[in-house]
Amino acid sequence: MAGNSYGNLFKLTTFGESHGEALGGSIDGCPPGIALDFEAIQMEMERRKPGQSSIVTQRKEADEVQFLSGIFEGKTTGTPIGFIIPNTNQKSDDYAHIKDSYRPSHADYVYEKKYGIRDYRGGGRSSARETACRVVAGAIAKQVIANVKINAFVSSVGEIFIDKPYQDLDFSKIESNPVRCPDEATASKMEDYIKEIKKQGDTVGGTITCVIQNVPIGLGEPVFNKLHAELGKAMLSINAVKGFEFGSGFCGAKMRGSEHNDLYNADGTTKTNLSGGIQGGISNGMDIYFRIAFKPVATLIQKQEALTTSGEIIESQGKGRHDPCVVPRAVPIVEAMAALVLADFYLLNKIYQ
Image (cartoon, rainbow, N blue to C red; front, side, top):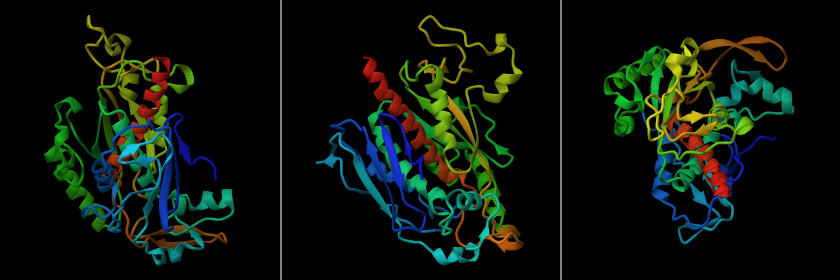
């Protein structure tokens, strides 16, 4: 299977399945001499892990990272950083009923057609559990670009949206509720809605907004390696993501140029930021902000039709432990992937200096 690595100079390669012995990865290209904050790394894992609240899957995993290489006396050595995350709470029997069938809107069918074999236990490699490895690497990448501030938050669940611009939000409140929405009144509505959806055995989608501040001018390469293109690729590689927009996004398509242009101040900043902090594929020093759309989780705890390996249509029902809404747990994953992109471009930019 190809496609298990991301990045150029700061490169992550991951391995493992949802119900295997462990997940793990290797980070190549991390600069030497960085004193790692291991508590900060584990805290990022705590934000992503299952079982953290009543509105997420109740699979219980400690998600404790074990580093195997690339670190000596608490500092990076410049050699590959190897790590594993043991799986300790698999319940593979929950998936025995889909051994010979394909779940709607899952990767089951295409995996088997492409590879001729699939691990049906929790989706195997296609499971969102793989993203735990990204969070480890992203937590280290954040420490490589320590001056850059990355804050992602849930901006909508179903039809419930935050009706304020991000500048009016207090990012310190993101972790104050299980939905990870910094607007308390909206967060309460979202939480109630997710709980109601869960009672119905259904799922719901939503959006995450990410704001990146203190980004130096000059990150990104023109033409094919534009900064926003790489951010889009990174976000679209996350499970369940169906859309990505940065800056004015699709709303910008409704505007006139006289409305959309970001006029300059004398110091090079701009009066508005509809460009989303990126012009010509290169960071301009303003806040980078983007929004990602997540589809509803495909596994429903209610009956629906499924296709068998012999070509029959049968009635099937999801079992086990699943998220009724994936967006709260995806917040640290979005931040991690953003950090990986920026760390990569940060190191590339140093070559020019």
